Image (tube, rainbow, N blue to C red; front, side, top):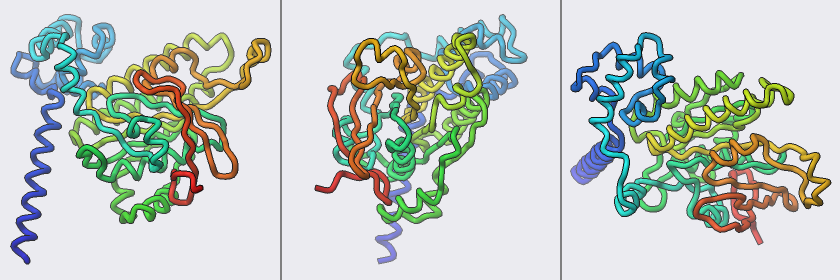
Length: 346
């Protein structure tokens, strides 16, 4: 009996090692630049500003790189040149890309109906945005995903850790314990896999994303989900009136660009919640629903999949695909229970 247990442990360890190798090969470490004549001090400077991979170098503009303390224009050109040698040509066939897309995974929401609507769950290498009024289940969905992302899932998804950025002080570990009971998970182990940060300003929120990226790089393949609840709350506070709108949208665009890059660079799923605003012009156009999500076109274009949440009767909620590159515009009904997001009981 003892021997078979030891063999089992060995197999698990070997599997984990194989998984690590796969994840390692998913991105190239920035330390590889040392082989191309870039010194370790300069690489450290890049790492402190959130650039930890070769792809990360390509994703950073020359202007932004020159703003990093201690990186001159000559150094920047040298780094860019070295990164270009390491990263293959930008083009690939659709067949090669479809093979690469097989690395994508989906995280279950806890409701079969909602998963079906999303094509299997929250997708990795993409930003999924859920918007709705207060009490439509946005934060409950975030809490449920904190737990479900740790469970092994379909298509060999192994489960993993979560990073959650809370901007509205709505994160409650006790709520996670209730949801963990539904899936028979150990409370301490489950909570230990959730990395939490409270953001106080929009700038702080952006800085925390750099920390999150560094964490994803430190433990490759361990983190599977990044949640921001909610993405626009602090921008609403820090920028007020029409006069600051252009500045707000630019800062927002930079942060969303960062989010998109993190999701692609480290193969993580990004889930963000968003608030609504009353649309004064809607009454003139006789729209049925005069409310719309905030963030304007910038946020609308940055999100890969947009999910609209509405209140239903009692504990039921209605989710509708608002925008998606590969999902039809359908609706699904789910309910909120003590165990998180579930299917509606007939």
